[in-house]
Length: 214
Image (cartoon, rainbow, N blue to C red; front, side, top):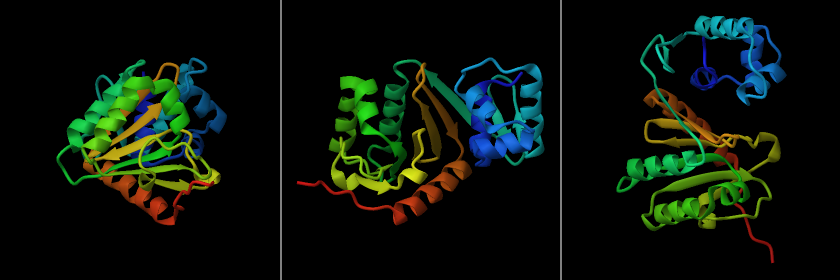
């Protein structure tokens, strides 16, 4: 039986929205949203419909929590619990420190990060900034909460602002779910990472530079 992590990873792999997955599986978007947020236990026939739709689109489900395209193997990991964000921060630092590669984060809501991440998370941000890891952050237009240097940020309109933060770094793409429980779904695949990198940079090019009012 499919896990929720596999469904999310497969949807991310295909670049599908919840609405697109729902249409392909003959289900409603609210049902997909409820399932992914774990607000209800999915029925067996619902999971079967999702599996058929995703497999028809070229996704293969492997033993455990694995997901891959027919054209290549996909490595996935899930961090769950109150330390999931810290574990992701450690991975980002270890992957990018001492390199010229960028960290790209969309869906930034620093007030939530500050609240849920606490001092440990703020220390990780400080360590990343001090080590000059290149960073681009997309936050919602009008959000005046800046943890990092303001030049790291761009504003996108509320209509296009994602409520789920996503990360692109090196050959990795990650999704952070606020929970409860907090969870990180990590996908390691160069093609996927590059696809989301190009999508991010297109949004960045259209985004506004934030400003601080007096």
